[in-house]
Length: 130
Image (cartoon, rainbow, N blue to C red; front, top):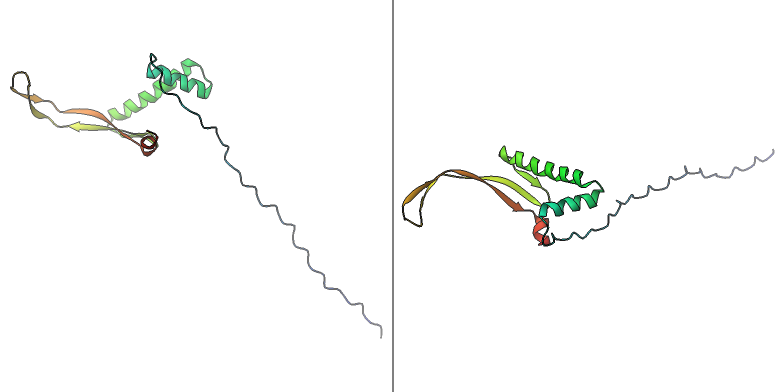
């Protein structure tokens, strides 16, 4: 009888490994140092300049952006809604009840009407920065 050829154990080839997906790192944005408002310049004009420099838009577009932001905050506060800008702080409406007061000049009792005022509470990031 003829000997059968011995079959060598052939290891099955593993499926080719897919390379591990590379971790996508968030694009590092350069840390920008913001300058304080210089003397002789209004804060509004300074903010318009910062928006303009950061986005590359025109001064008119930056003015519209700032006006829109302030208008949105104002209209929300008129509706007694709280406006929260994470990291910066939150604006809210505080109600003051009517009360009695004293006129310091004459000493007479006066009535002080109920009123509303805007309160601002700084966020943690702003507190840490200052």
